[in-house]
Length: 224
Ligand SMILES: *Cc1c(COP(=O)(O)O)cnc(C)c1O
Image (tube, rainbow, N blue to C red; front, side, top):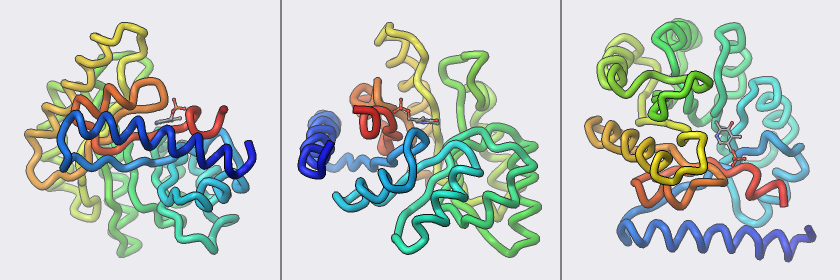
């Protein structure tokens, strides 16, 4: 796609987000994080040029590489993948804006220890496996609120901002909707939380209608 085509395509996606969020409320603001794992630094630069600022990567090495290459741009980096404990140090060198994927107490405690030592803080979301899928990380909806409270009290250098979830992996919209509603109802029980991160290329409009205020879009932006 040339720049004009890319801008038109991006505008069409923003239009869809606009229509979905207005169905919730005029005051319901939705943020886009561009999941850039499919592309290299140049494609990120192109999307930046037409206005996108927040990008998400799911592998620490890729995040580090792209953040270094694009160092001169004021990008906001999100880490959205499963984090292995042996990658924590490398992740922290990037100073990401937020990590979406706190999926165990063990990981939260390991991050806390490293953050404390480095005198850093990090915004974080706690991941819930609302679809109850084996293949997905995250706490079960039943344990989520207790673990969230525990991480809040035991990990003061992790600044919890809310919840992240991946919608059910099925074509049955009702099942996907139910998983989003589960996530949103947990989000509503948190005090001081600002971010409900759910919705990807295949299901972002439904996610927004269920209350998402941050969508992580990859293939729809980069694989056209
Ligand atoms: C890749 C990825 C996305 C974006 O997925 P698409 O279906 O390509 O939009 C969102 N969230 C996470 C955690 C991802 O790894």
